[in-house]
Image (cartoon, rainbow, N blue to C red; front, side):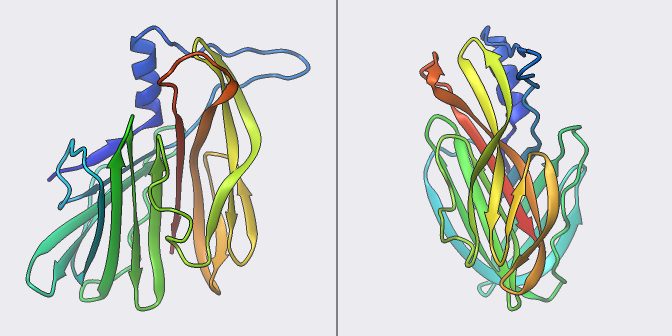
Length: 234
């Protein structure tokens, strides 16, 4: 099994290993809190681990297996030509507790998958899984550029919201923002949080997993990036 992963916690640890530990600044007027975020992984058989190319893959077939991992879940799909591919994902909250949603499909059901991934300074990727009833699940992990794009999920727009956390680091001021989900209604969530979302007349759940970036006016490291991670599932 191959898997491509990203973790904001691991990213912070990597910064720490190079001397960029996070220091939290507190004042009475504007108390800063540590940047708190969840964690997301995604993997797809057709894309090898550590692959540095760009991929935009469409795969359609019948569900032949649903598997639980620890943590995470997987979905096995058999294409019309008999080829089998496995899609997996994992979501953990800010306390590193596995909260991965199960794929809301049954064995024998036909599904369509779009997988997108690319590497720049860091890995960005995501997927949109649909069936005859509409969206099943979507995930975007953006570290140095969006993966899915604005029209990937019909009827859904995801954008940044107000600043919710600040942390002083040697690379500058790191900011965390809420995530705004615009569907049949507007939903503003602070990472990490999960709330009901109505999309195209159906009930879903929206997950704000992480959204952090350095203040461009106060960034001191050329490789200081950002993390934007969200999901929607049925």
